[in-house]
Length: 346
Image 1 (cartoon, rainbow, N blue to C red):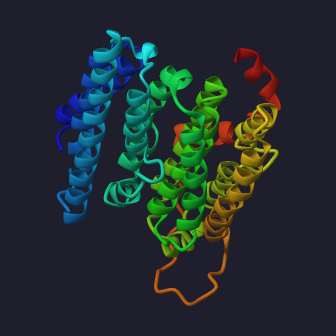
Image 2 (cartoon, rainbow, N blue to C red):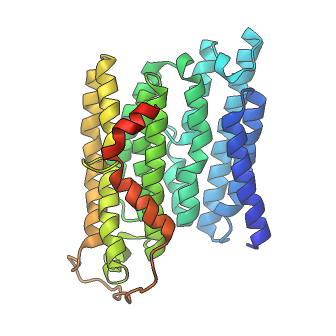
């Protein structure tokens, strides 16, 4: 793909995301969601591999269906109330349809089936965009309409997402699929709190984006697409592998790392809202995710593979680590001590 085309698609993604999160009219938001979808499709399918073409087709069909439901929901609301403002969504049927549409866009259970397949067919960098930037507009729309949405529906989807995200990630050997199920699990944490504390859901999304970007960029630096490859990369970049271990544990939500902050605050808020049972269930379900993060971390830092591997050991890479990776991994590990400042900003 030539640089001019890449620049156009990158600009389209940036403009589409910015205009969606800043618009207050449903038609404007819907148009920019479509711009985003059309801009990412060439990036997914640029390798011309059958797997990439399949991923792009699946992504297009799901996103087109979800966008149609967003438009249908806003038109139904406008028909009954005369309001096109995003924050004025009040008709019960419209609220339910919008919840389904945004769950499809985000990949929440039971609309999650497309996400691991699409991520597996994409490169690591496009996978990073799909897991972070492409989730920002739907999360923003959920944030804006959160007072109108039913907490019971969101809570059911959230608990199912955390359960299935953790459970289905257990037997995966491909790093992209593991990160896809990790994303589904994290979205469950955002969905469960968005009706009670939308700002906390956004904080969770920002920190999730930070940690996921660090993991994706680290894996891209060492070119690890499978666990068997990850086992042999310790010879190539030992320091990066050691930091990757901590970043994965942060993504799992272990203290005293950054990833513990949103989980701690969400459980605290759910307990205040008298839904301690949901908080207990989602906290226990996060242990499933912890298992496959530990497995990834074990594979990343182990010095002798537990079985004979056909992969040759890789040469030590003397090139300096990318500055972006260094900054993101540092923030993924060190933000918990400054949580009072973060909470003051909220």
